Image (cartoon, rainbow, N blue to C red):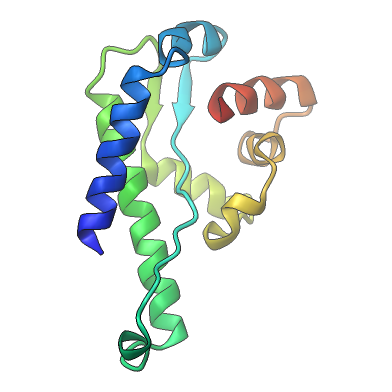
Length: 137
């Protein structure tokens, strides 16, 4: 399982470094001073034998922990890059998500525009849309 996470992270960073969109990062974040890395929804597949040893609650806890590990890895990667914007810490991001009533296990079900508006209480949709567009590309 840890190997799958590591492989996924390595592939993510490899693809990101080859992507033409990465070279557009400054353009996409031109009106931003800070960006947040949100946890991804994680799903762990267990064999039937492994399922006998793990409860559904334990499995959900493992999936949430894995999603936060990926979030931390991406944050660390971005912090060590020479970016024009600051990277908001995962603890602040997760605190804002919690305060906004966002369930981390269902974060993929939340529209990124609404997520930005809830996290930062923006009254105007255009600001949330700009942020959402920059993180969804």
